[in-house]
Length: 245
Ligand code: PGA
Image (cartoon, rainbow, N blue to C red; front, side, top):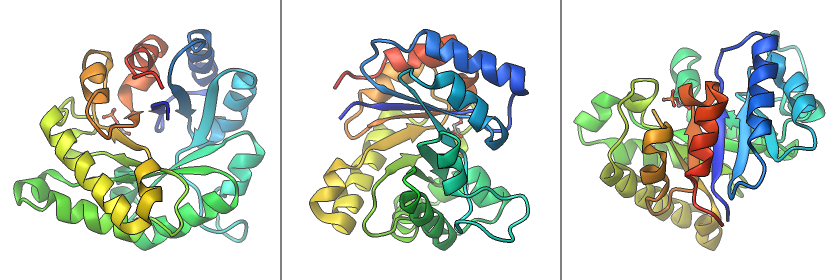
């Protein structure tokens, strides 16, 4: 399976910047051996999807509500994302777990809603610096996987150690190797053989200069890229570092 290089634009960019970034990514997206995805702010998903229609770059949301519709002021459903051209959605990002109090149970419901709407979920897990300092990183990630993934699960997992997000501190290749092997074991425990085929992305300060090393680690099925996805050239350089099929 090709590696997936996903850009999480977070809350960055007015519409002209979003359009320019999408065009920049599309301009260099031909002939890469990986899958490419950009996840703009919800407000820009429709416009970016129009720009990227017919290119190899897919579009995703950064969150969705667990219901299909209803009285949920300010929220967006997976079906709405799908309707405007998104085929992926990031769920359970640590910024949503921390800033919006999202629990594993809620993330599982959102994941189910995404799958039901035909939108592929990218479910994020990862420990904080304190949890790692306390030697609890695998326990925490194990609980997150058990709580956040519905059965069956048709999506992607992203391991993003919270201390590596936006900090410039990348997990070492040894840390990534150990955690991705653990996540693979857990996925096989939860889903049997199907767990072997679930891609596991690494995220947290991925950039062009460290991408090749991180993407070469066993069980790394791609990258979830924040800050470095806001520059088309840098994002495309990461994509070129991905392993071919
Ligand atoms: P970062 O963010 O690449 O800026 O560390 C990654 C993420 O939060 O998905």
